[in-house]
Length: 437
Image 1: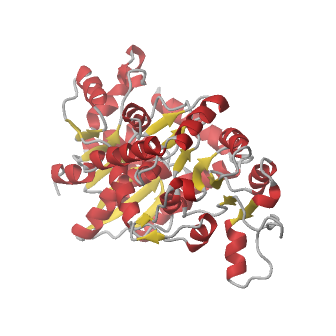
Image 2: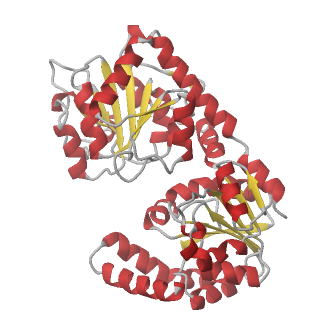
């Protein structure tokens, strides 16, 4: 039955690729994967294979890859992706020796792939349970690990109708899970080779914090500078407060911009999830246009480019200090959170929240929307009051008013957010001590 579903899916992808650019990239990438492997695999090398569905899972596997790369140079690393949103962003990642798409999980593809690569071990990140690949890995005696995985009662493995597919879980050598619930669910179907390590993303965000960039354009915009790892924080009442919204979507933006249009004592930095021109112009339409600047516009002017990319208006002479800075490029968000008094992580009114620890690590309270039940870090941050779930504009306005009025409350919530991230670190070390290298 599983193989029938896979072949039906393959047909659907082939048809969809005719109409959708993202699907077309995935379809072409999967078909090209074997050519990449034939050209790049070194028959004499020992490969450790990491598979990540997309960018988020890559970030979870990245601390392990980088530790292996630096401490065990006898191995080479193969990194595969399922989604273009992971591959297209990280196809030039220097921490892996080979990067390609994972060919679709048919029996023929799995056998061909493993014959070419001959990995000495494999790591599947979080939700990746490809039936044919995993069964052949087990048959060949290749140690296979599930990293940062998390399980919930409603998943197919724990339903009566999913028992046959659930056998795929017995192919893993060991599970490194995020929480006790996951361990109990696996124990309930007879799987005991489980260690609770938490989420490797916490190691990653701490690593990112150490490598954070100083951004002069942002510092000039907010009127503050960095001193070492931290921003020079003056008394909150003596300067504009800074709200940083990361990975935001239109429902997020409509809500918080409505609030801040009525509170001119705040400065806003918005790093939207989608930076297409239509979306950027939609954000501008929700603001006072003369108060908005775009990061690449300022960057172009500083570099002496007389034809900057941005079509956005520059501030008027009678209002020379912009209040909204739009980050219209990638790669800056994790460093920008350092400048926040309050952070907002988008997606919680739609697809699901994005990377909460990336903001929390900087010691600021973090807002997020209601679609967060599947995200352990959201539940934990709500419990320790470092995170704030909001369900509506009125809810958001109430919490923002409370934080604005009570500096001690704002700082205490931020402190709890940072403590939560620090307490959850260490998964990478535990995993690498446990695998047979």
